[in-house]
Length: 188
Length: 189
Image 1 (cartoon, each protein chain N blue to C red):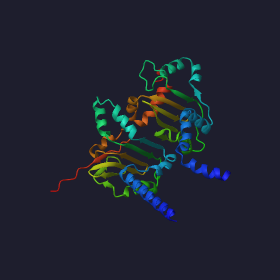
Image 2 (cartoon, chains in turn brown, purple; image 1 turned 180 degrees about the vertical axis):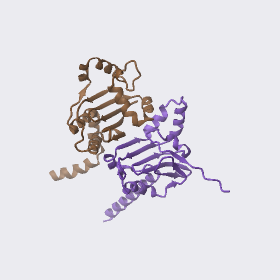
Image 3 (cartoon, chains in turn yellow, red; image 1 turned 45 degrees about the horizontal axis):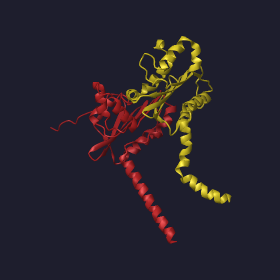
Image 4 (tube, one colour; image 1 turned 30 degrees about the vertical axis):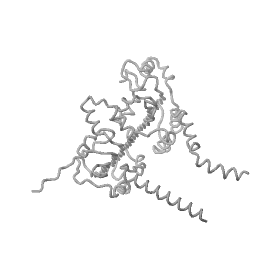
């Protein structure tokens, strides 16, 4: 009976596209932002701070939140679409090398996000990764920035017009989005 | 036995059909595989990897306002492009990449559909090679391979490219400034 079941179900399992796509569909609904934050935490042995933690920093937070929710200045991100995980004053020495971190990141987002740009600078010990995904009429951008002592994971929804403008200089895109989401007005 | 023969015949036909479809698709696709260079990212002092696929190119072309003169130029440049892919590596010292790394790109361009443009030079030091894929009367894609002892850059543009305007793409969409110049052939007198 077991053999019969195996011989019947195995080819079906291999042939039925629904079974191939099912795990992807489940993951797509999951929290890729959270998964990426976890990759950073586990790889570098660090802990992130979310915006609620920054709230304790008083005035800085007020401006930050104002900026994130679409303050008076022109914002890149759509109001209310921003997710930020901030890592401050921690050690980002890659234990398994940059290549290993990149592989972990790509494996986490594989198939659901387009790896749009990656900039690695050994001299500055800096890494920037930008991934893109369709979000209906808008686009979701996930930016991972790692520096020597700081890092940030930012996810934002961008209007196609904003994306088109940023696309002209992709090397600066990650920085522009991260700065927009994490820096306060008085820091610029 | 007859059924087995029939099945094998069908399978062979399907395989042949599959192969011919794959070959045709590859022949028309100007996108090259730059994956063999990925390992250089870990050794390079600076590494840039840009992937702009057809969908992203369309967004850019569609949503650039086209009111500013610069945006009009860019819209013209990227009109019909199906992708821009860039890998660029800078090294602290000479020998950061090997001949095998360069050959992993050149070997793909030995296909007869690719031809090397000879009247190309660069204001920068090092060597620059530009290859175009021609489909009938149109350029279907392009590869720029720029090398110097401390730097390796590969730019792959998929889709119809106006060679005269190639230099205008430098500094845009992740294409580095390569100082490309197309020298016009001297008149025979």
